[in-house]
Amino acid sequence: MTSGLLDPETGINVRRLLQTAVALAEDNDGRVLLLGLATADDESSLKAVREQIEAGKLNTSDSSPGVKFVEERQSQLTRIVDIAQDLGQDVSVTATVRVVTDPTNGILDILKSRREMAVLLLRGTSLDEGGFLSRSTIDAVLAEADCDVFVENLGTQSGSNALYIPDIDGNTVASLAESEADTIDSVLLPVGTGPHSALATEAARAVASAADAPVTVLHVIDPDASGKSRADAKDLLKFAEYVLGPAVTVETEIQEAADPTEVIVETAQMHDFTAIGAPEQQSRLEHLVFESVQETLTERSRVRVLIARDSDRTMRSLYYHWKQGIDAMDSNESQ
Image 1 (tube, rainbow, N blue to C red):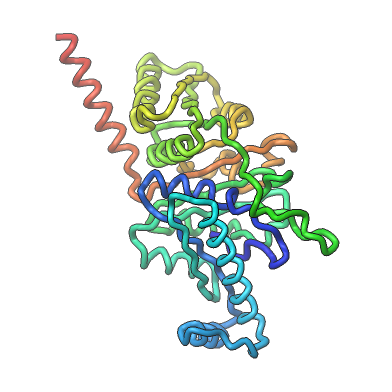
Image 2 (image 1 turned 60 degrees about the vertical axis):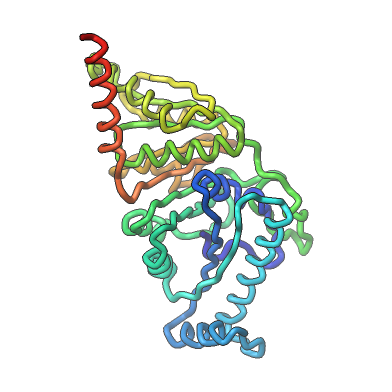
């Protein structure tokens, strides 16, 4: 979801826009619904625009900003869907525009009516973020939505494979509909025992499968960790391999550090894509998504990060249930 996305004169790299969404949908036998949000100034304006939409046609003679904004969003999303169909995507891509007075409440209301939906929120960096959802909206959706939530930090947007290149001096740089998304040659999956790691692992599997890329599963332990903690770390990596499945090439790695954040940040710079479970409490890991990439990584970084928040918080029960089975097997083998 994006709130504004692009102005009418901006080229759209549809492959880049849909890359992660299509991968997630394909892995779950689902489809992609693009949601454009148009914001009305007040309830009366909202009612007027909605009445026109429900009637099947916007009043083109209405010069109000709300109506023009809706027309622009509809036109943008129609172009995106048309291009997606021309790309031959195996996943169905459709689009809709919703008029709301408040983007946060609007998104939450939509998600309440679609229980089987997972939501992917895009977070921009390095260019004007006016067309993207605000930090406060993303925070609210992460905290309150009843469905699975993914937040993707798009990384540094530059070069021919950027999500968009604004119109410069009246000359659109290129038809980005013809551009390619950046190649994903490696995926990093930092794992822990938090409740969202399983969903992050599934997301890593989806992206890696779509890109035919290997996954490095990373777990960071304290240098003074006990023998049991080290054994648990190995089991955690085995669990991640199990979720990733046999179709994905997997490498596992355990590193020792007092601060896992530093290790994850450094390792992320060596991979094209990082999938990670949402932190249970505020930490510097949030900077990977919610702050400028340049503030956390190097200025030239192109790191893309996907945070996953599991609505069912199943990781603990799933992991420990799996671990109990492994322990029971080991016990039987030793008898």
